[in-house]
Image 1 (tube, rainbow, N blue to C red):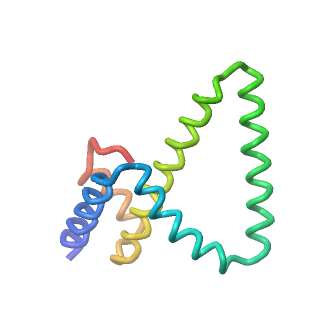
Image 2 (cartoon, rainbow, N blue to C red):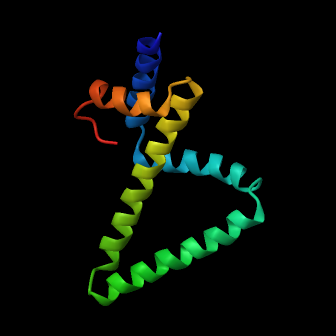
Length: 115
């Protein structure tokens, strides 16, 4: 049974890996926008603090003469990787795959694939 669920998760991962990163991000952002409307005010306040932290870090790196292009590229790559990881974890959860098992089994099943 777990083997079947892991196979299904593996197929899902292959499917999302075929999608261009910008399209993956765009489709994921549409889902996030819907969820965002239902979040409590505390989450919005934390989001503002998070934004300030990111801005502060970006400003510090700009002062170190790191190109804005490098900063944007790294932020983009991080956002894509983070979105992909969350999509996989959400799918694993919907399949009833325990997070601990998911981490252990996925390491073996998808060795060599980046997450």
